[in-house]
Length: 123
Length: 170
Image 1 (cartoon, rainbow over the protein chains, first blue to last red):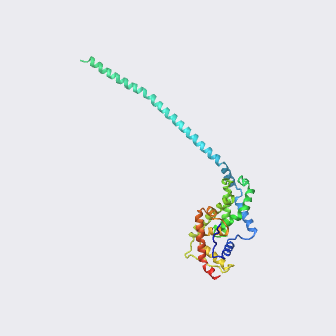
Image 2: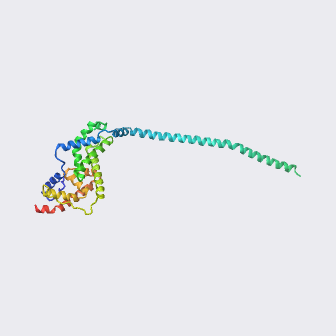
């Protein structure tokens, strides 16, 4: 295993590291740590907002699945009702189209019969 | 850990008690001041508390927490930079050596550290003071391991250059 060279030329490394540790040392005394611990716990202590947030978070997966299922069901219902509507509209068109066609063709037939009759009876 | 995840405040308090010193050290390596480091530790634990359900037991809790605290510290640093830029003085002051410092080396080193880019300083302190590996530092700071290695190299070179006269005097 090779050790990486520390700061400075040989012999100065430990002094430099010790000095760096002094500069970055946390404040002395247990009082500081106790105070910091208290402040951290005060910030994370359960508030109304946290309770709401945690409950929501706990139910998040269930809510997501229920939401997805609701979207799928709504989609299927919409598709089905759309198909029903299309079918009803088609049937309505089909049923309303029969009479005019018959009338038209009958009218046509009568007209051509009249023409034939006029031709036969004509001079 | 499982008790803390199921919402036990006592279990979470134990986690805070066990890990806050390491968390402070990580935050202090990244933040410019002790006060910012304290804020970062509090923010980090708050974020960790809220994200506990996402923590997977097969992970190392300390590494997971350190990453969160490091992110909180980087956020504070970014916010401070924006604030400082808004209130930039007309002439930039160069940090001066304070003669009241206990030793010349300490004073000179403090000044030299202020000249280092933030990330290089963080990498140097995390490696040389706190003893983290390049890989661990990379994970904490969200940079590739090679970048951490190169930052450390540049930070040391920069300090050596600034403190060259100190070495030659001794």
